[in-house]
Length: 185
Length: 185
Image (cartoon, rainbow over all chains, first blue to last red; front, top):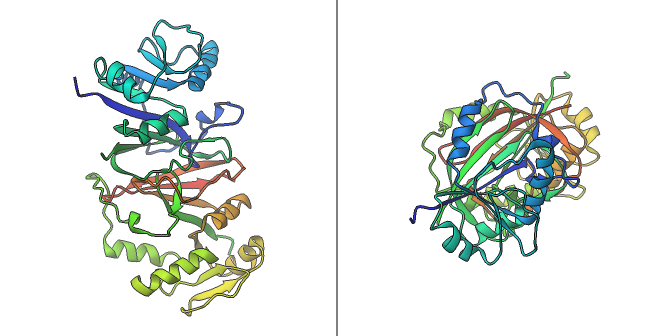
């Protein structure tokens, strides 16, 4: 089972910001319209999400997802979700598990034997760690048509150069553009 | 002549860096190949560049362009080029003029009466000033398939939110992706 692929996926503004200071997410709902953009049917989305067999996220991303779930429901369905944290966190979904320890061990012992298509969905620090340890195979950055001006930056001087291979570019009707890269090893 | 359009254009890495610490530019020559990407013929490029009737740049961008011109020739042809600077700078091209004063006056007194398609080509501070003063009509960000990790960031907490309209997305064979936005006024 050495076919594990790890994708880091995140939504950012054009200026590389992934979270506003107040954590509000209304900027995800753009008012933009890009005529030539792709549309996604509910069925497309469902099939796509089915192909992901495990999510990995940091503690604060989890706490944020948990807060949002009160209003919008849990975003990650029944898919196994590993939360990297050194502290205890409330668990409200049977699919969620809190893990700690280093990322190399997590990948080799927990992910490789069980999964093929793992998505790391944030936050910025965890994504930087995956890139820094060369554990990420692909990057999907969804760029929203907005400059936020302040907040948490995805790539804040991550310190190491990394060549990429452009795999795909998909603009959507909402004005969002997905940039899809392979990390060159 | 109120049809002046001001476009800010810059090349950045995926992590939003526009200049390495040592100012080297070899990262512009990607080793990537994106099969579905567009190619640009010399004729396309020439016609496109002809449509730009004035360049505006900051002092350091100019000094860098001047240094590069020793080896590669002057990149901006005979097109009028205004350099924003409070200090004297060497002029080696008849098309170059050093200007100072505030940007609103520059736009109203120097650009509007004479030009229709002005490109602001850097650096980061000048581009941020144009955005901040709402003087930029369009943004063209050419994203190279690389993470640089450190250097000068284009958008370093620019502090003000700005909605954009996606106008076009063009991936090139080199793996570069041009994101083209209209600044919503």
